[in-house]
Amino acid sequence: MKQITVTDIAEMTLRDRVQLVEDIWDSIAEISEFIEVPEWHKEELDKRLKAYHDNPNAGSPWPEVKQRIIGK
Image (cartoon, rainbow, N blue to C red; front, side):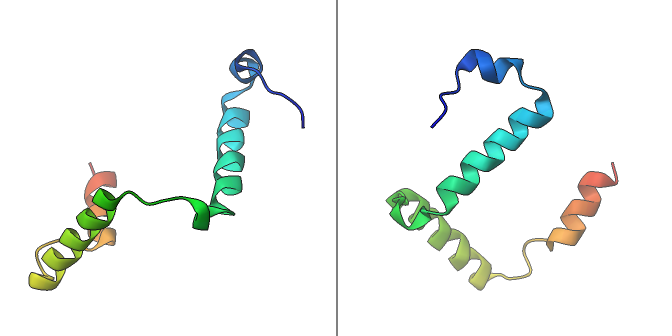
């Protein structure tokens, strides 16, 4: 495996650095079953899911949120 230094990365174009990050993330995602999800993440997700079930109309659908962000 070729070693990449911080200097090598700093000399890359922005596009190449973004591609490198994507490639690294993809390699991590391939073995995601080995990554432990912290308990507090699970608790937060459970809390948000409960809030949604308690009041499903409280939020906004993604297309509306996206339009508000882009529309500014």
